Each structure stands twice: as structure tokens, then as C-alpha cells.
Amino acid sequence: MRSLRFRLLALWIMLVVSGIATGYLLFESFQQTANARLARSEELVARACRDLADRYQFFVAGWSGGPIDDRLKGELTGVTQTALAGAAGVEGGIWQADAGSLAYAFPTYEGTGPKTDLPAAEQNTIREVNSEALRSGRPASIQQAGRSQVLIVHACPLRGPLQGATGWTMTRVFTAQGPAYTQLLAGLMVLALTIFGSALWLARLLYTWSRNIALIESELDHRRDGLVDLPKLARTGTPELDRLVDALNATGERLSLERRRAASAERLAALGRLSAGLAHEIRNPIAAMRLKAENALAVADGSRSNAALSTILQQVDRLDLLLRDLLDMTQAHEPKLTDVDLASFIQRTLDAHRELAAAKDLIITAGTEGACRELPRFDPFQMQRALDNLILNAIQNCPPGGIVAVDARRRDGSLVLRVADTGAGISAELREHLFEPFVTGRPDGTGLGLAIVREIARNHDGEARLVPAPRGATFEIEVPWRSS
Image 1 (cartoon, rainbow, N blue to C red):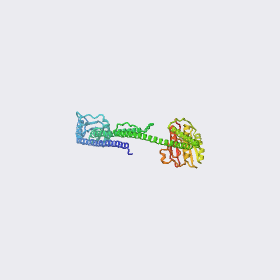
Image 2: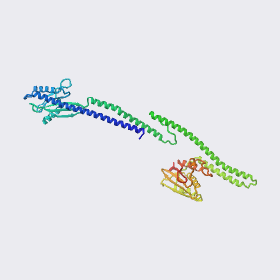
Image 3: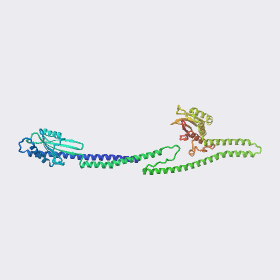
Image 4: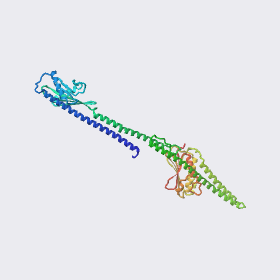
């Protein structure tokens, strides 16, 4: 919720909402101004019609009537011009139901000359509003809204010798013109250039930042086979992000350098431990052979020669086994993969250790889980040797009455071979280097068994590990179910 992306998005939403609200308020203000202008125009035409009625009453006072001729129409036109002279933008006249228009005037017309012709397009509206005023005996109005203007026509009955006479006035209110409309356009233009422009700019900034950050995250999360160093990130073109990219690239270079230094130091340390362990393992048999040879030579009659030679041969066999294990660990052997029946494989492996387990009064159990029609594929001879080492370690570290459990199962597309015992477990100081050569907790051990187990697992593209257990020690070998 506090990320920069969220804050920019919140700011963008605020800008859009503010722009919409401001535009709405501007439109409502213009609408109210237009409504006010419309109300003023309605009052203007009504007042002009009353003025026309007053002038007409004055004109017909004392007149008993007569024929409707051109002279009368001219006089009525003069009455209309006088009545509307002070009403800007208002045109009107006198109408009779039977004769139609008796007089028309538009004294404030701003054309090249006075307008004397009755507007042809509005004649039906004029006839309609006069008929309504004559029928009801009181003023009547009609409004007709167009795209850019509103037409207001007002009529009022006239009393006098002329039967069916009414006065009418008309004006046009241009809603898309005037100062209010100009202010609305200017306000909307400023709004579009500022708020909505800022919103668009911010949206583009948000998209660019999100895309660049997503690219950086994707590049950092991308796994490259065999590579553990941080990737070299490409610059984004955004100065702030490029500073972060440069810092990450520099950090990656330093980490890579330090990792190479640490790996070199670790290799030297491992080589030192291997050399020290190998020297120690070779020195003990040589010392025993030397002692036996010196004792045999000290007796002139040769009575100790046979015992000395037998001991020397035993130590030679020990050295030969040590070197063979060391070669097996350091030389990678390509596994010969084949389909293996797990149940038979586990039983066959355990049968070789049941006599030794019984001699130590141990219970050895076997189990398989996750049965599948598709058999696992691995090298049974190498894997049996790895299990032999784990089972022998468990038997040697388990007290009488203990249990050694061996099981195999399928887990997430992998074959997991597990050997667990109820012994004392692995001491904390040995766990970190448990699978390194010559690391052992037994005085008579070579420390190569677990190293061989790990190499066999890695030859199958898997791994060997010590897993946490409430009691004793539990080792797992995990390899692909169908190694390729």
C-alpha cells in the first residue's frame, strides 16, 4: 500500500477525479448562467408585450373602429416600433385571428437596414402562441430550443375595437455565444491542458516506471542454468532507475568477485583438509607396518615374520580400499540407467545387512510409498552402494535394540531414498562438513562414505542431505524419478 506505484496511481486517480469534478462545475456554472439569461429574456419579451398593449390601448382610445387597410396597418406598425424601441433584440407585432399579421417591427435590428418582413420560419409558432393567448384571454409563451439558441415567443390579448387582436413579441437567446460561453470554453481548454494533461503525463510515467521495474524484477528473478551471479542489468533510460541499476550492477560485480575469492579459498581449504585427512589415513597403516617389520627384524629366529607379514598385508588391503574409495569419489562414473522395481531393490539391499543388524540386536525395516505404474530410472549398482554406506553408518551408530528404517517414495516427480536410525544423531560440529572427505565421528572411519553418497546422488542429477529429525539421524537421497 505504501509503494511508489500505488502512490502514483492514487495521485493519477485524484487528478482524473479533480478534472471531471472541475469540468462538471464549469458546465453547471455555464448552465446556470444560460438559465439566468433565458429568464431575463423571458421577462424582457413579456415586458415588451405589455408595453405594446399599453401603446395599443392609447392608440385606439376614442376610436370606434373601421376597415383594416394599409393606412391602419402603417399606423399600427408605428405603434409597434415605438413600443419596442427600448427592448434590445426584441421583435414583434399585432396579430388578428382572421387577418393574420397587422403590424410587424424590429426597431433594434442590427442589419444594414430596418427589418420589415415577418419571419417566415417562425410564422406557425407566432400563429400558435397568439391563438393560445386569444383563447385563454391571458398572456402565453412558447420556447423552442435549438442547437445554439432558444426562441422565445410571447403573446398577450389586446382590448379594443379590433376583434381577435393580440400583441406578440419574440427574441432569440444564443446559449453558445456570449461571455459565459467564452469563459466555459477557456476554462475547459485550461482544464484539458493542465489537469488532464498532467493526468496523461502521470499515466505515462506510471506505465514507464511499472514496465521498467517489472523488467528489472524479471531479469533478477530469471534463473540461468549454471550461473549464480547477479545478471548484468540494462539501463532503462530513466535517470532515477538507472542509478539503481548501476548500483545493482556494481554490487553484482563485487559479489561475483567476492564469490570467486570465497570459492577459491574454499577449494584451498577443502584441498588442505583432504590432504591432511589423506596423510592421516595413510600414516596410520604405514606406522603399523613399520612397527611390525621392526619387531620381526628384532628377533633373529624369524618367529614373528609370519605375524608381521599378515599384519602388513591387512594394512595394505586397508590402504587399497582407502585409495579405491578415494578414486571412486573423485572420478565421476556415468550411471547406467535402467528401470528398477523399488520394492525388490530395497529388499535386496537390506538382505545384505540383516545379519550384521541381527548381530547388534537391531531391527531393520523397509517400506515403499507412492506406488506408480511408471518405474523409476537410475543405476541400481551405484544407488545400492550409496544405500550400503548409509545403512552401515546407521547400524554402526545405533545402540542395541534400536531401529534402522529404509524406505523409498515418490515426491513431486523425484525419487527419495531415506535411511533413518534411532541412534545418538550427528553432533553440531560435524553437520556443516558432514559430506566432505575424511570427516567422520568414528575413530575407525575413513570419512569417505558420505562423500561417495553425495557424488553418486550428483551423478544422477540429485542431492544427498541430512534432514532434521526428532531422534537419531535421517539421510535422504533425492534424484529425478526418471533420470535422463
